[in-house]
Image (tube, rainbow, N blue to C red; front, side, top):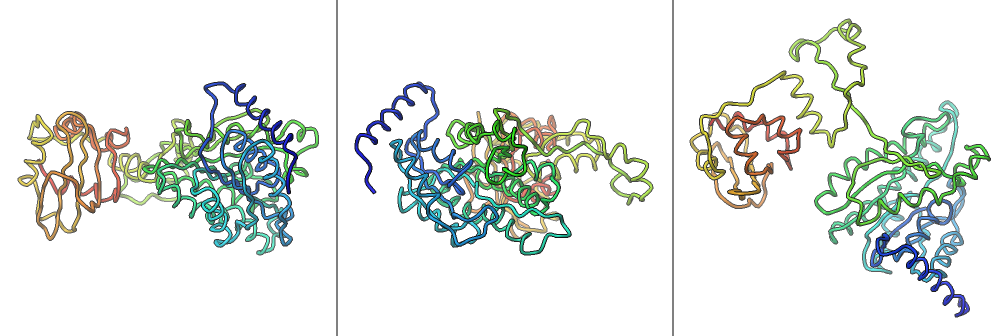
Length: 443
């Protein structure tokens, strides 16, 4: 369908004026390709329009079903948003696949690649509601909500992640909910799916880290067809989707360096939410199994959130604070070396090797940065050790550290556990293998 030329010209002028108003420091998406699911209305529509205004090429996905996911779908919602973007001088294509199937997710990503050649940004926004109290919630109404929200995000993210990894850039935004973070009566299915997306993000941020793929999650409070009968009418007027879009677009931008975070947003209010873990208490000294009575007596200490903190991943908790708490205060191992240079450590490794402790084959890769640093690996195979300079083709465990810190560690001036939890020692690959080092080498 053609549009009058003067309308397109006017739209282009309005768009250009908007660009000039935003100034030199404005956040742009020129050259970026974005997928927005559930973009036929509400929040998704606003995200798609704003991305289009700021230069992104947009895939507007919407199945076109009812609020509860029923119906055979319709093209009109996605098509209308595409026309709106084009009227503003932007580029967009529509997609009508359902996110609830793997085929639908692959189809959405294929649309982006066929039309624009790549995928840079994915906003998982599609959702439905089927609210009921638990005893009235039939299995099919439990499952369909998980299929759209949680499995739907997986279905689209998996192929999109592959495309992003090839390009060395990606921004993914998940959509959780206050219902998932804090609970809401009559929404066990929805709350479960929404908190599941936080777990999805927590692991995906680790897998995407080295490919410059940032993954964050928003918990929006906005007027939409999903909230029109949940929130009071007077609040709906104050909760336009436009208030949520700014933080979503920031999370999609090159300027955003954060990953693995959750943000509440609505009505111009923004804050960060996080899963916090308290220091806790060790009962039984880590060797004696505590009794139920031990737990009862120590309940105030167990439940106390004073000193709670975030953890970047499971290993930081298990190999860091939990192990440190079980071991108690442990002095840094005393080295007889007095190493002056990094190369001296690797020269001394064969003499420090404990062949009797080498019960498994493993390759340790060392990447030491700074003065005197470099790459070395220690390969243990069949009870024998090989130490060499360079990068091994398939290390099982990689340790990264600054040269000065590594010398302090090997000279007994720094505790390995503290080095790891402070971020001075970074471990990639099989972290549990790193626990063998103290047994394998006695300097």
